[in-house]
Amino acid sequence: MSELLGLFNEVAPLEPITDLVDILAWITNGKSREIKFKLFDDVSMVYELQLAKMEFSRWSENLDSFRCRTAYFEEVAGEKSWHFYLSSIVGKGQIGHSNQYLTHWFYPYKGKFHGQMIKALLNFMAVTEQSTVLDPFVGSGTTIVECATIGVLSVGVEINPALCFVSLVKHQALSIDFPKFRQVLHRLPLSKIFQRFTQQLEKPKPLELPSMPFDGESLSQAIWEQIFPDIVNDLPFEYRNLLLLVFLHALSDYTYLKDTGKARPLEVFWQENLTEYFRTIEGVHRVREMLSINFAPARIFCADALTLPLPGNSVEGIVTSPPYSIALDYVRNDEHLLKYFGLNADSLRRRMIGLKGQGKQRLVMYEQDMRQSLLEMVRVLKPYGWVAIILGDVVVGEQRTDFCQRILQWAPELGFDQAIALRRPILGGYARLRFEYILLLRKGGNEDGAKC
Image (cartoon, rainbow, N blue to C red; front, side, top):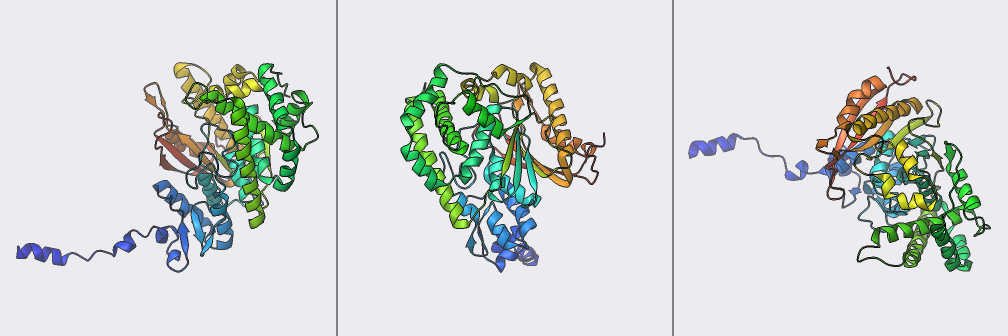
């Protein structure tokens, strides 16, 4: 026994446990021992802590700017971050500070990613007010909304015209003058507007669109000139667009809940969403005035990510999530929206990445399209710019795809000189997704992009 005790006496004493678990000190490289920082209480997953460290590493020498930009810090140098105030504008279904705040909750689009995570990736890229960020699969507009909050210009590309409209309105809503909007809303015949929107359901008038690419403003103008030329045509487009999005949100709620215990008349969903949208617009205006935020502009294009409508070497960063179409049928999920505008769902399905082909051929075509979309990203990205790709790990039949590893293997020949991946576990949600991967790819100094 005495020999055993002697062995214990020879072991070096352990470090204080506070040093071993001082996460803030690790994230801030020790600065938190001199300057007061605080992470949001719900920042606890490994990937979040990694992203917090990555965003801090880019902005640690400019804490005033970092306080305005940070995604994961509640306090910087003892002052509340802008994200604290922005994420306090609570939206439907919001939990914590990761998503559904601001206008992110407008329209229930499936498969969107967390705004908080996107903001951290933008911070890691160190994009500024002089930069432009692209999302070639913009979906419902998360990237452009987050770019707007940190003053970065953005471009969103989306093949689905209906989602182009959703993205456009979510961005426009950030800058609506609430007092003026409130005055206008109080004098509008909202019940008649609802009835007019409902008529399009009963007798849909097809929307005729120009050949791609075309921008979101052209899309908005076509909707009001072709389908609703006789309603609220004296209002600014952003007011009209917002009212229509409220109706489309109500239509989505009605469609998905009509055969459940939560089913209610369409007009009830319209009235409830109108009230909640109104509350969000008021909150955005209040915080915008308090912080003196000028939300950055964005451009939306209805176009194909395989042939981006942008010149080469024109953007400083790219943040995107390619469609998980091999696991999630986006066309079917938004078919009510496409039908409302009289758009051809089958035509969209034939062009959409991941929905082309049948059986094994579908995976082959998905891989080909993914590679082509990456070549386009390399083409439009400036040298030394970063691409951040959020990619799911999905099962098709009995086969679990591993496109994360494949993209990492492709990276050098496509023109990327750095390629890393972070893994984010999926807790609950869509059962066929076990993990998401955050791929970070840096374009090399060769302006021509791909080497092959």
